[in-house]
Amino acid sequence: MRPLDEKETTVVFEKLFKFTGNNLKNIVENPSPEGPDKDPGRYCFRLHKNKVYYVSDSLVKRATNVARPKLASIGTCIGRFTHAGNFHLTIECLNLLAVNAKHKVWLKPTSEMSFLYANHVLKGGLGRITENIAPGDGVVVFSMSDLPLGFGIAAKSTQDCRKLDPNAIVVLHQADIGGYLRMENQSEQLIEE
Image (cartoon, rainbow, N blue to C red):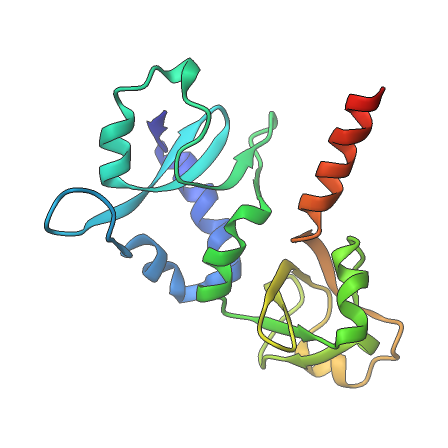
C-alpha cells in the first residue's frame, strides 16, 4: 500500500471531478472521525494492488503493521487502474459520489429495475434531471425516494432531453447497485461447475 504518485493522483481526481465538480474539495478535505487521536485526521487516497482506496490517515498508520501480501483491503475501494493505466470507478464509491454529486438524475419507479439490470437510462424512465448537464458529464442516478442506484455518463444535455422521444438514451450506464447481485450469481455458478 502506497500513496498515489502525481500522475495517478491527476487521473483519479479528473475522474472524480467529472462527477463532483467543485465538490471534489469536500472529498479531499473531509475530516475523519476515526481513530484514537483527539483531533480528527483527514481522508487520503492509497493504492494497493491496482485498486485505489479512500481511507482515514489513522487507519493507514495502523495498517502499516500488516504485511502487504496479507492486506486484502483497507477503507473504501473507489476504483481501479487497468493494465493500460486507465482508471475506472467502482460501485463502492457510490455513497461518496452521491453526497457530492454535481449532476443528478432521478428515475421513475418503473425504470429502476431496468437500470439495476445494467441497462442505459431512457428518456421515458426519467423522473427528474438537474439543470446544466452537458453530454459527457458524470451523472449519479437516484430513485424518486433519493436512494442512490448507480452512476453513468450523460448522453444528452438537459435541454436536449426535453425534446427527445421516450426511447432515446439519456444516461449511459457505468455501474449500479444491482452489480453486487450479478457478481454473487456469477460466483455461485463458478462454484457449481
